[in-house]
Length: 272
Image (tube, rainbow, N blue to C red; front, side, top):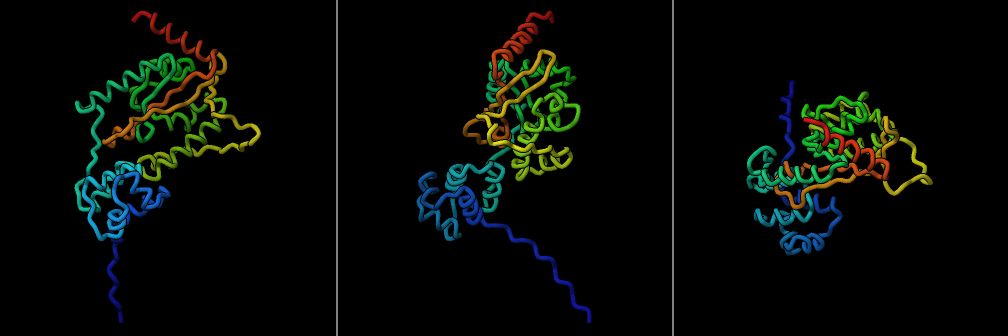
């Protein structure tokens, strides 16, 4: 006798309260800790997590911001609670982003003669200052900054910036680890990583550890040393804005400063 096949069972959606509980535990916070951070009473928070109370949109916002949850994940919690997604992804070219573009232009220009680039959520180069193009020129790398350059790709693929790094294994390993963590919640970045060659992870001698990992670049002007720092926007309320970060490559010694300063001043004097 043929038995009817059972219908496949779909996984039930996770309730908003349970998602909040999981996020709180991932952040290693007690209910009291989160209550103090968010201004939501511990009793009300307990009721929300167990489903005995429905959180208002304002309460959800306060809890999620206190937990520093990525905005796209916040939208999933709002949907689970029965509300419309709260956070949008506004195109950077839109009129609503005029102030943001102005701030980015100011930061990039102010960073000259040190290179600086604006990266999106998939490590795509959104914008770069003049000194970034000059650095690529010093390395004789034919790169068009407006042609969809991806920093992760040019670091990891043969023929790119990674080939000019004197500590390529170290920098590639750091970039791969950072991108892999970000890819856990970003399918597009995960797909990109799957197409790139994984780097060799160098053995680390504890006796040789330094306070910072320098980016060491070989050029016709000798070895150049840079410190890497990142700038992000504080209190973002938009997914696009939250994904942006500015990487500053700050010369780490007087010689590198001089090479970059000379290249920048020569570019200014060059007839247009």
